[in-house]
Image (cartoon, rainbow, N blue to C red; front, side, top):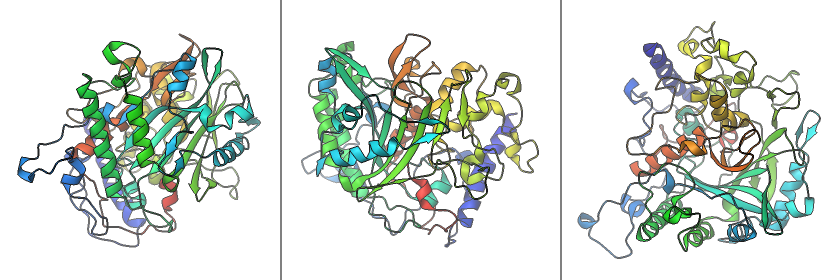
Length: 515
């Protein structure tokens, strides 16, 4: 069993490099990593000659005074809470007023200007699946950027993880991701609503040719890392450490184990956003909405360019019933019939490598799933993908070394953890499951979503069946991504596994945008 699982992973890694050649007009020599390196998330040994890269001293500099290189101390290593910031759920008007919102300042104006945000809400109201449509309890209130509060911030040096094919096609895409949710106030009571948007600011150069991979802006991202180190130092001076702390509500918001923050902490985060966010870097928005107050949960994604939104296809392998029909641009998780269902669901296919084999958590919503956990997903496959089993699905989805936003559907990213809580025995061996880097902390069990009504990935998720109300929530996948991000930053700038290939028209780089 161990050898079979290991071989699956090795085959996937090698096949990814094979597919990379098929999706490139250039064919520089590449040697696949040996099996022992298959899950290594270290930086590529071959940097692109066309990608500007700051010297290590710029990336790691935490001193404002000149120091001889031989005397520069190594900066403290990052842990998960240095790249991910989760706020406590607001309870009172004072809590809400203290939160950062989309109405706060970026480098060139508001984080999300009123008119542009109104257009986004108008787009959301056109989104639906079947007979269901996204709608809002109060259009006027929900169109205000100030209503949408920052529940979390995530900084990622590579939004597509370390998936070789994704990096070859899409490039290295550093990003700052804001997780925002609408919060209204009635008297002194805060009301969080079950909508969310992931607003992603790309730290890349302009990308006019959509067939080419993104070019990372090393200088811009190095400046972000420097400011994150400054925040880490600021907290340490206040007596709060982020090292060896499980991913949870950020320690800076739990000063002396109370529900108050380190004085000035939110101000530091505001400054981080004002310094590094701008309208030209707003690239992608992923949105989840409901029909006003109840499920089903509907997901869609738009890209942003020059103030214009473009609906994008849902990632994953889908087979439309009509050959002339386009891939779906929205997806839904519904409990309308009393049984959780995913619509549309991806279609498993051992040959659909670029789409993650079509493997999704939709497979785990079948009523008889518990009695089929050892079923092969691809029993007739002629390659070793046939060793992938139903019980491996959740770990497979949650592994950012294998799965990313270019090959994974929305519902899967938001439900792999709650499926684990519902179905006993969902686990995979190392290789399919993510291997935590040495020295990187894991996620606190208390924030892993357990209620099937909680479809939040990172933020404030709604519990319906137990301890009803909104709770701080982090999925296993989001935790794994944070761990990978901290590790990548600790190891230094990364580069694509080959030198700047040009994506083939059959492998559009657009689909590799983070969401």
